[in-house]
Image 1: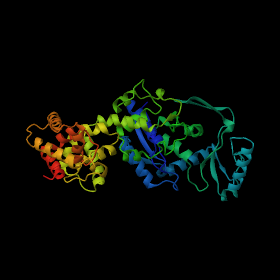
Image 2: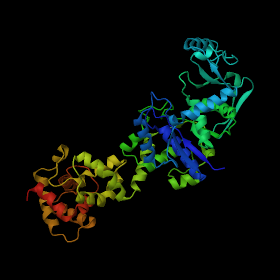
Image 3: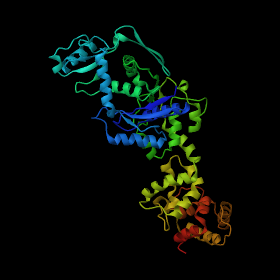
Image 4: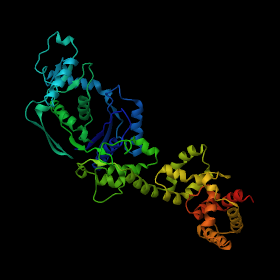
Length: 467
């Protein structure tokens, strides 16, 4: 059997963390067994579905590197097929027309709840033979659910789940306005797409029990089910924006690398021994549903940042430059010159050791992006007084005669200048940093000077000591 999985989001909002993890698990499972991963946009709720949300889903999945093996299916395009199946079930007397008014249904639900029942519809139309007069009235179509025994699901994550059938409603599959419901559309589409494994959040367990009976009524094979626990906040409660309940695109904007996000999502509810850093290649080789836990996972932003730091430090300098250039252009409100881009790449080994996100890396890269004369930050300007400028003037003279321009040689000349002026290294290093970068914070000042090169370093010092 060829494995076919699907990710089926509703385009009513952003692609959130839970949805992204569901997509990743489905994609990895399909890749693990050399099957297919498909994307379906469940847009039957036309009032709440938006094209903007669809775009966010597509862009979020693309950023994560999760691509469907076929063009995405829009569920609303398949409504004719959904209605066809509903009419077939009606003809086979596996479904029936319900003529209950909204008022009757409201009263029915109120009564059932007061009696502590979970089945809210009393099935009054189930055995009713519609008259000619009935057929002139609005009606919905309901599926006939079994009244006796139990429904059993052998879930690949949750294990065995049993529900007493008498507690199950004869749910609506076609609304009074003639449109198919989500419950019907999902089952028909899963069958038509050849889905073999449904991997989704455990908030769909109640749906699964009902959808199982639709598969049976249609005499179709039932996909294997795997319901993964939800993601909670750091304190174990429902995930909030404060904890990380943001659109996946927000993490890209804050400078998280897609590799880090995939690694983090993978470890939210799945494990492989003590492995923490897991590449996509390894994830495809190792991923299976038997290693998915039953307990909810807890989102931890600090752990995500730590993972991001690891991936950032192990990324190629060239790739990182391509990530930071667009951010720098916005920060500077101007294009980054090719000279500055070259400096950033040469300075990247030191920059990425001091950064946790791409945004932070871009901000730290500003020291190599600005052209002379640079703007000295207000809190840094206090380091440039008469005494320190005199020291920088001496240093300028000493460096002007240097032939070898590397970190070791530069550190030696700065230390020599400090000794000649009977001061400690930091008393000249900090004014030097301010003069060259405009800031009191940077990678090693010797590394900075090596990156700038002799000509640029001396030019920057000139603007401060006014030689």
